[in-house]
Image (cartoon, rainbow, N blue to C red; front, side, top):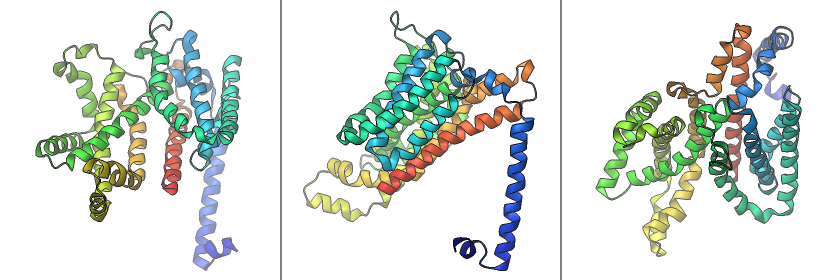
Amino acid sequence: MWLRRNLFNTWYNAVLTVVLLAALFAAARAVLVWAFDVAEWQVIAANLRLFMVGTFPASETWRVWLVVAIATALLGLSWGIWPNVARDVAIAALAGLLVLALLPFSVPSRLVLVAGALLIAGGMLIGRRVPHMGRAVAVAWLLLLPLAILLLRGVGIALPVVGSSRWGGLLLTLTLAAASIVLAFPLGVLLALGRRSSLPVIRLVCTMLIEVVRGVPLITVLFMMQIMLPLFIPGGENIDNVLRAIMGFTVFTAAYIAENVRGGLQAIPRGQEEAARALGLNPLLTTGLIVLPQALRIVIPANVGQFISLFKDTSLVAVAGLFDLLGIARSVLAQSEFLGRQSEVLLFVAAVYWVFAYSLTHVSKRLEARG
């Protein structure tokens, strides 16, 4: 039997198993008693909208829900088309939306959450029936970020502009993380290729950029983007604070991705490049079709770890006066009626960070297994 073979195969393993189970039971019991009998979750219920979208205008919140609807529909389609990669994440998102619908949102908000769950389920059914939509869905995922930013910010009279100073909470955290990841990955790949270039000038510039950025703390890069950027770029003082933060995160993350990718490139046997040249492929095709795809597959775990680190480091935007999820938590704790509720607020914030970080980890494992 598995239990006897793995947990009770010797007397000292049996003792250790019993002691650890007793400790885990005691800890779990204490946490559950605190969560259900002691904790006052009203602080979360009363500020749930603030945690999600910050001070985004209530009359324009439909834009956020529209972005959520598009994302859930794409997630459902991805579940149907690539079940080995997206299934668990889609199921978790579906369950999460249904759980959120039980929280004290307004009735319209609850209906939107249920509609999002239905979109995931419906998208899955459509994706299974039309699996050849994979390329279109992949393109839609790439276009989702610029479309979301366009919808959230607005374009003028038809769609009133909502300044990024009104963005906050989870909305701002996800925007910063998603935009920085999308921009940093291709930049990091280009820097890695540039560092291996046979042209001395390109190799020197890429190497200097990577080493300088990797040699300073992230908060220093963010300070530079907020304070010193106007000194280097004419009119830089007019650049939006959120955009400045995205630029800082992008440059910093790209430098680390470049080193990850360079390690993957060095792991590819040189014989493959020689074989590609023997077949008549030029250096560009050899890198793009033979070497780079294998290198990127090798460094999936390292890059995903960097993306998770970036997602958590978005809390540093407090130096720019922006209120991300953790910044909103601090402002909630400053409310007089919720003084002393640090445990509930910080546990809620930690749970949100954990859900997204674990989802990224799970998807990376699926991708690595498929490769």
